[in-house]
Image 1 (cartoon, one colour):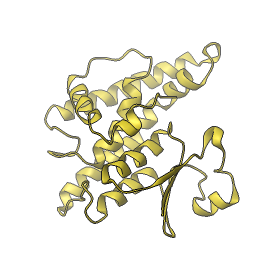
Image 2: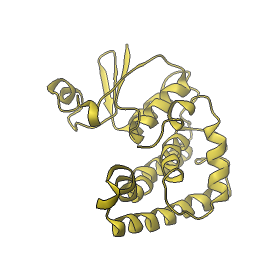
Image 3: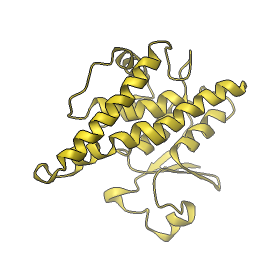
Length: 206
């Protein structure tokens, strides 16, 4: 039995959902985190001591951290997200997974929280603007990169597209001023048309 713990509107849970959907493997998603609670329970903390989501539970095997889950599903036998044998190709995927986790998503965090989860009269406008400016720079970097490649880590769709794509979905749908990024838009439009993408990209950001 395969279970994924986490709420559907979490960007990190969305990465894991998309990855599992791409494989076609059966799984059960259990709401956890945010208003659902659960993550503070002793049973959950025994699986995931961070108290965060997502957590993948599979026949006694437990894995947390969304990008680790993506790497795992890519390595499963027969996975359409097959992990490449070439160390340099693997390194390229890792590079963009790390960039998403350490730069792209953190850069937009203040803007996201302030615009989507803080009442309008209580928002920190300076934090929003600083976050917007930072993320614009990172979106520009991604746009320049995608000018020379159809997908984030090369010629084929893979887990780097899932991780960066979930972050891009948030950025492109936030009520903020953004510069036009034609290459990023072309890529996002392409990956958003995948069947598995509909499991997460149709969920309103919140």
